[in-house]
Image (cartoon, rainbow, N blue to C red; front, top):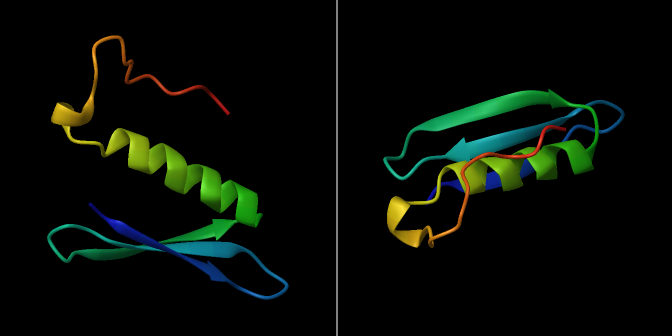
Length: 65
């Protein structure tokens, strides 16, 4: 599973650093608040769940924000 690191940028936006299972790294820039960054991380974790973790009745659609 990917790892996520929240990077505060004092007086500015928040960034999210991601390291994928394969070691690939990327950084998403410019979340206005920490809550926005945390919400994105939560949604990304849901989208990234392996198929074998999904139970009957689970839906892959996420609520609009």
